[in-house]
Image 1 (cartoon, rainbow, N blue to C red):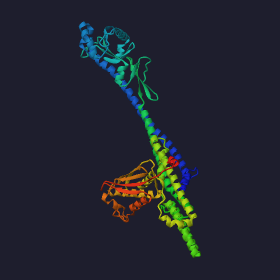
Image 2: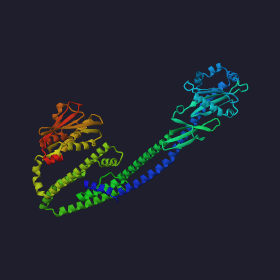
Image 3: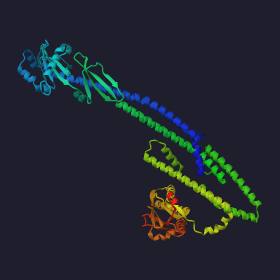
Image 4: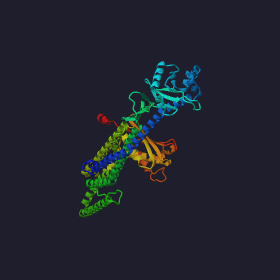
Length: 619
């Protein structure tokens, strides 16, 4: 059977097999689907995020233009108060020291938040001008302010209005300037000149207002807003208008392309996510095809191989289905039934022809000799795989993924290696059983003559690993009932002298009793722990469960023939047989418990095996 499974794996991976063709077809469909999906998502996601980025850049430009306008508007509002003021109107008619000391004081300019201030006559003559920085007069900047006023066409800047705001270059300094006609407070009277205020603007102030790093450039100004996109940022320049409306400087800054980056991330995530979903869907489809089509076909082929090898015309008893596979199984079983009927008829005729005392004796001896072979074959057919093939397949498929963490990958590799070792051990054990059957067939007379004597002898003892026996029975017991059982046992090998088959039955019986004790508590889960200790030349195995336990006074009764603590069972030969088997293997079995509800402990004691050096190194 193991050979058939291996042949099946080879066929599924062969280039010309149906499974291999299915893998290639699904792989091609998956790649084409992933590429088409990526192109579709790119055409949907990228334009949307590009539009959002353009809107964000336009918003930055609008905010910058608003800041540039607000700076001149604030200075214009301040200068308008000085322009429409009776005191200013009287001062332009007859300048006085008192007005200058009061209205041109450092405190007044600081309160107005301006750096420069000047009164200019209608003829362009400057009546008074002052420029301060941090409450200190700066003569050099005053001269630059005076020269800038001399170059300024105030009437053109006002454009028929009483006040205006714009930007001026004061050497290498950019200033927001406000200018207003000097009139009475009610706006009447012939204007007697102009009052001008200037507020210096630098890159730090602009950056603070825009809440991002910006710079002012006076050289090579442009009258148009420019937007230059790089891979990660967008460079933006916004013109700063002078008195004639043309740019005299530019505000430059850059903003990150967050929307483009977010769009790219969304595209990558969407492509990866959809590809993963597509891959999972294709994988599920492949598994369904393998389960519904390939696996039933392989079961039929495997059963045909078993019939060919063993000669036992047993029917294929898998679950029937109403599809084409079910029809194939029905036809196959009909053929086997006909062959079996023909064989029975042939055996009947042979028995009738050889009806004599010697023939009867020979057939009797042959039948007795074939009983061990039948037992070996029956055990081989009924034996379940040591490890579920589906679990191994899932481990292999997970190993094929590149994103599996290193620690997880090491565990999966160790599991696959252990599964392969279990398959090899099962094959070796089956080969050994076939060898036993063949030897029995060759020594018919010896087996018949020694059968009765062997039945009364002690079972042959050999060195066997109790840890391996516990692990195998734990795997079987974990999935044999409706409750979830957590097992813990040591991983180090411990060798004892026993019959491996009988010891495995004893351990399996004890695990079954422990599982029933856990289920008797009404819980749906429990735990069984196994500890192994070596004491001198003996090995003690302790099996502890958290089941219902028992009264310590009833411990001797548990080993009596026919006794059982389960009301729905009868017989009670399990523990009685286990105890006798342990005695036959020169060991002992003891049951302990601290009382009802405290769990129970089964103590197995066996002789320690003395291994030779080569076998010890292999272990």
